[in-house]
Length: 278
Image (cartoon, rainbow, N blue to C red; front, side, top):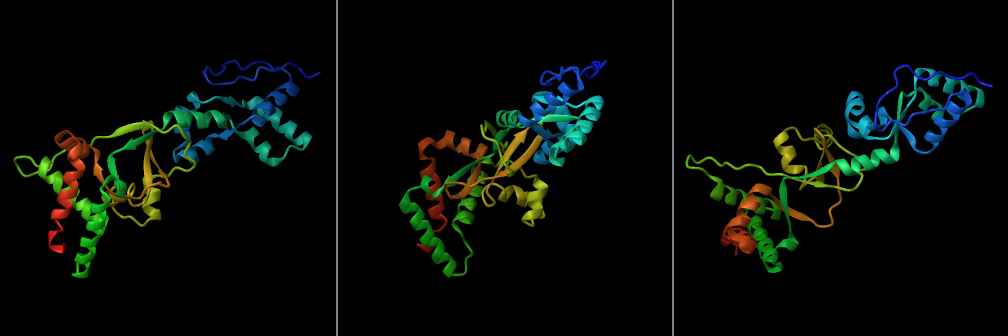
């Protein structure tokens, strides 16, 4: 019979810590293996790699919120001997060297419930406008390009947004001022892959942050996510093709001014600027 293993003198006091209460060596091994086989396989390094953050950040921020087990120094020695004596495969045995193992399912649930989608822009697709308007704008753009212009539907509509911004947000000193509003929404889904701003800029060859923020959502197709003080980006496949975006604060202000007529205001402004290419 195995000798009784004494409890740790200073046990961890954590709400989501699952304690291994067995006393014998055999039962300790059996209980750890039970949890590992049932999804407690996510290491601190795994979580840090997923979030593109440091190990200490995971320990201080993630671990208290996610169900986990801890492998003490003594239990590690017992588990490693058990692995050696019983031919445990290396993939599983390497987990015995980790101090903390998180529940994969509970980690994903925590991310789903905690990560928020940050919306800074109102996006417009072709479906937001009258079909006749889109056809007419495309014709006028084509005529302008025949005369040496370098216009696209996106660039022209973005210009209209800039015009409206200057028209309604210019102060008495001629300076455009507005507060960039944001809305945070729960995503209720688990992002498979997260990117940092640095990774995206490197992958797409973007040198300046201002260009990054102009392109990351509309042109590159990423959405901005926030977990605590971490900002990350997820590549998404949009069902609709968006043609331009407007700061949320500007959109809200124009909504207050024009209500349901806002789309007509944008359409009229866009057509007027291309009058010479009728």
